[in-house]
Length: 397
View 1 (cartoon, rainbow, N blue to C red):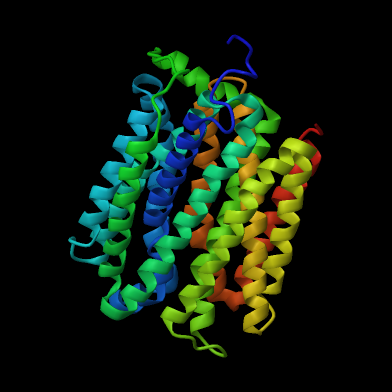
View 2: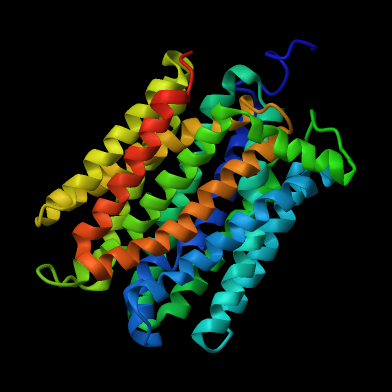
């Protein structure tokens, strides 16, 4: 077929289902490892004798590595193929996840976590490009939502598995259990992922490679989408980094195993991300993205109420709204690319995980200065800024 809309695996075909299942499993493997320390942060802080924001470096070191890894991995994927590059990236990440539990001392562990994140960068750098190339264009938004739902389950699994095991036997066994789960998901990805049909290897000079990257920075729409990832992801990670400290202190004083159930709110993202893809296909991407941001702000504000059920509701709304917006934005950067498609996705991921690393850490400073209201105020300001930019710049469809 030569028509751009009809090329690629059609929804309902066996290859389409295998591809979505494969991306689902690699999403679980990636994000289970990336965020497994998050439910263990109070335990890491106590065992290692570090402050809350220093403990959060266990997450920030990996997300910084991921942010710096997405662009190099996008070029690797251009040369060797998306599927093989993702397979090597996630396999090496699993190896570093095992090394993390073997290294003594807190600061050396952070170095290994950075290297683990550098390897994990291969998945978000290439998954959306692989998907956009191999499925029909009309199905791309809904397919991207399914991939994002795998990332939400991965984030949930990493936290839910690690926290109870960590409280019983220590944070390192908790993280090792998540590494084992990730390895099983990697095996499923390698088995299920179909060979690429639409990929053509590209070897370009460094000037052409730089042009494919920087060409996208001439688009105001893409700049706003990249900032959307930076601002909202930074706020989202800050909320999950420090809500455990909030619930472990007065007036709640909850044990860590019980606090870990707050991460069940991630299921809201598992539901909202594919739904957002379908709504975007029907109504347009801009209103769905803006609606997700508004829901996120409502959820963040509700966590100020000193009642556990209301805080849980707030985290559910925060998560559902965030992943709805993210599912739309992550698919939009590929279709709106004005230069290299995988490089556009990599720039989005660079902003997305730089926000996770920098702003996720900064939330701890606000926590120390003004308590939980300080962190909440920071996150509300970030999401409001992202929403205002999207309202002014993103086009109606």
